Amino acid sequence: MTAAPAPTPVGRYVPRRARRADSTTRLGRGIAASAVVHAAVVAAIAFWPREAPRPLPPVYRVSLQAAPPGPRAEGIVTPT
Image (cartoon, rainbow, N blue to C red):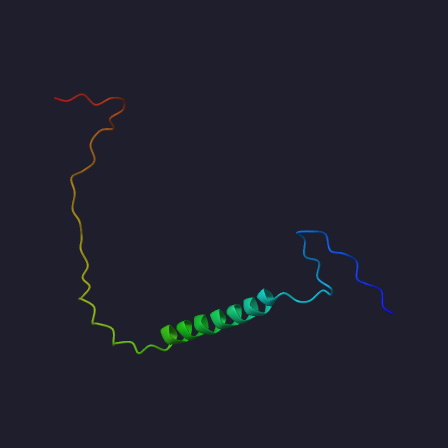
């Protein structure tokens, strides 16, 4: 004759043996799927055909002319 299992307290579930949660398997698959999708997007951006660069406008040199510097002004400037 076998012994009867110990009674379970009311309102509490006690598993008979420890097992891996179903969510851990689904989490791993989700992470793997996300990595594959991200790698595909990066590869698509990296290998997307680019159009030829537009020609740049001509470059020219400019010499700026200015008035000679005036006396230094210190403090508050009053309007004239």
